[in-house]
Amino acid sequence: MSREPILTARGLVKRYGRVTALDHADFDLYPGEVLAVIGDNGAGKSSLIKAISGAVRPDEGEMTLEGKPIHFRSPMEARDAGIETVYQNLALSPALSIADNMFLGREIRKPGVMGSWFRMLDRKAMEKKARDKLTELGLMTIQNISQAVETLSGGQRQGVAVARAAAFGSKVVIMDEPTAALGVKESRRVLELIQDVKKRGLPIVLISHNMPHVFEVADRIHIHRLGKRLTVINPTEYTMSDAVAFMTGAKAPPPS
View 1 (cartoon, rainbow, N blue to C red):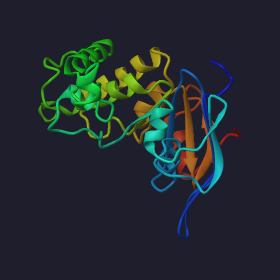
View 2: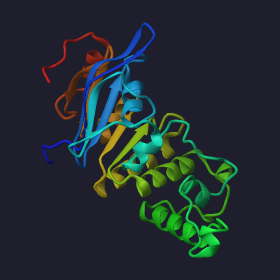
View 3: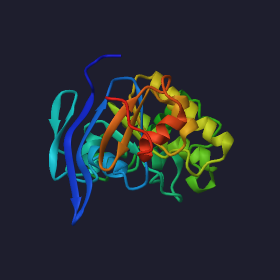
């Protein structure tokens, strides 16, 4: 693992009125790793992820991507920079097809006048790319790329959202509670997907409350407490009980 982080944050502060959600928070993501971010409710995990993914603008602090300063004003700017986020609610449009969802906001237009003047979509190209990406991630249990997302199971929907992130996230993929609403079998598939995306060389930030999942797939675990990074632990050196004790303040953290 390269010792130069791909994504960093230093001294992030975010206040909402009198509430300080981020209190000089730091963050480091290294190339090709799965970094889990855990913390109690209200610890500031979501504010941290929102700052990294462009959904909120920090009041103070700085962030870098591949060593260059970043100042995202919207999630669209983060996406353009190569940071894709799979949100807990998946942000899919149920009535649209799998292919349409994969290319939502990034539709491919037909070449020439039909695309530039008449704004006609190149459905064949979108369906081919969507099918290729789903096949690459082992998701072609989905028979028909033009079927509506609302006809899919929870695990399949999660698969489409992950495939979309992996297709367009050229630098970082963030996954927010990807197994929260899924059963055992579907959760297993999502954990395999995380490994598949990692094998393709993309670093992943995994936000999760599910300790067994975190300890199974994470290379490092960032523990967030009271608005800042408390410590980062190696899951092979600590137990789930240790992680929970650090997270809740029951036990002093190891020096990071």
